Image 1 (cartoon, rainbow over the protein chains, first blue to last red):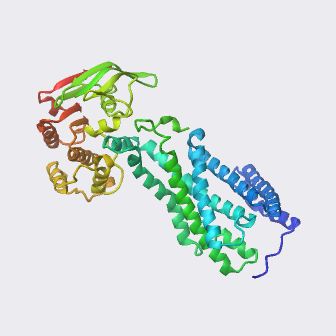
Image 2: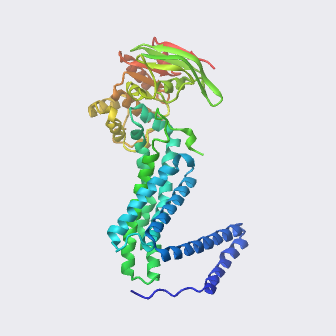
Length: 263
Length: 206
């Protein structure tokens, strides 16, 4: 194990904020008009991360398997909520099925990753469960949002195609199948591109973090590879399950797409 | 037999159909005409159960249409409309997927028959191996017509199916459908080629 990178003192961190003078100056100079937004976003990031660090300190301190699991579930609730907000669908129809898909999809990948790949003495530690859970969910989130919005937007835009398939004798699921395929492909595409360039174009955050934390690049890379596989599985499972669970809700008894799904 | 009894239908604030009744016997032919917006296409969509009437009933072969029997009723019909969205991918894969539906599995997919129709309907240079996204509107329409014919349903619901075709093909396709003696045809069209034949006509007005 190499030595961990030195801690950053509070004063030094404030000096880090001095960097903002450059984008702010540029924004003022060419009148981008986003100075306010920039400070709000930076402020939010700082506050949220500080709060999470306090929480993480507590979680690490107590390190109770039940509390750790509860925190992962809270993160899943946030992830499901964020997916709903960004996909342009009505909350009340979809929240529970999407929560369930994350719970099963990300939950399975997380437990497999910890239990089978890392194989530690204790499974539900804050260090593994909470940290890896957050990473898995955070990385699955974008792809799942792309997948769900793609599916329902395509159905809305190509309603005629869907109805035509019904007229050809398809069941609801059979008529949804082409849309399902296209949505899963759309969700996977950025992720696959990302994996294919990993290490060449950019060094992923988890690996960088571990190396800064003192782990050897060798260990860091193995974790990175395994987490990418887990994220990929989590994305695929979460999307498939969320489309599977919501499939019946979006359609009436005649198989016709309900208009009130969309905001 | 297809029967519509006293159908009222509104979409939003607009009443599209008011007290519409009609009857088409087995093997019968009905041509529906009328200005745009008079609900011609809506009648076909009603028969397909893609839209529900506010009042009135749709009856297919003595069965009042409902959410349970709609799935088997749809298997008696083949529908082609004027602007088809068939999706993407190879033409033959699309048709094969339709044949793979649980409810269509009893049908035999016959590649020779497919080739025969491609030839008959003048798909010059376009074959089952071409991709749907590369086909023109008129070609997509013919793929849908061919799919409908391959499924051999007893009822054909044809919504302006010859609009994107030249005179020669119009004559060929109308002729082909009219020569199918046992088929029940419900046709929505402005096209002269149907009028030249002796068909029962329903005119809708607003």
